[in-house]
Image (cartoon, rainbow, N blue to C red):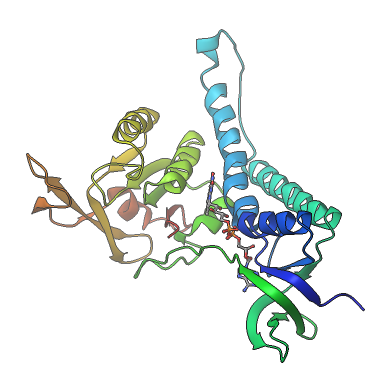
Length: 298
Ligand SMILES: Cc1cc2nc3c(=O)[nH]c(=O)nc-3n(C[C@H](O)[C@H](O)[C@H](O)COP(=O)(O)OP(=O)(O)OC[C@H]3O[C@@H](n4cnc5c(N)ncnc54)[C@H](O)[C@@H]3O)c2cc1C
């Protein structure tokens, strides 16, 4: 029978959870990890890693279309979008199995299933109930529990992802076909990465940001340089803009603010009438869903 009593149970096998588990094991604690989906969490499976694999492909595409500047010549350069996405998934899978290997080596068992705190035993140990997709639930006991369950995508009211016109980061990572047009809501690191990837692969991209500048949590100099570079790449950027609820099909409205001559933080002088993003309304005539939005993580 496998061990069910531990010094430490870590719920969540993302970078927060698996690193804590490895360190605890190194320090001599008997440790287990409970993971509902894939080891490596969002970062390895749906975040940092697959986005970088896609960005590498878009960088190559960008270079291949700028060969002349480097003294090279190539004709009929094209790409297989499905292969690009498949490579990104393969890189994620490889790194996720690397985490499994590390935990095995450190003698940290992984319990696959959804972990839930389930009270305390008579001798004061915490109970963690692990519900599996198939099979009976299992109870683990632990002196300590670490909750490392990560973050979820923020769902904007009226813009709930439907997998067709509105994507979260998940759908944006595994598109079935290259969208012709894309509106990205939110210009933090994740939004700008998706905007850059899809633009470099040839989509018409509009990036919408409610704050006065893109990458609003970065230094002003960085966001000014990035703004200029993204516009050079052909990304249309709307700052001081807020997307309203979805109207019909892929149509949304955006309200923009004009900044005061001497801006005070968070105060705007004039509200422009809502504008329907023209590329969105044009695509509403298309039968196939070609235009999509992506929404940010909270
Ligand atoms: C598109 C995208 C790109 C990103 N790019 C970067 C980047 O380039 N650099 C960077 O530093 N960060 C990046 N991030 C952020 C990064 O992914 C997170 O900061 C990181 O994953 C957080 O790690 P975590 O372990 O706290 O949570 P997570 O990675 O979310 O892991 C939590 C794990 O817990 C599991 N879980 C949740 N609840 C339960 C439960 N009850 N029982 C069992 N298991 C459970 C989940 O299945 C998940 O595997 C990106 C995020 C996204 C979405």
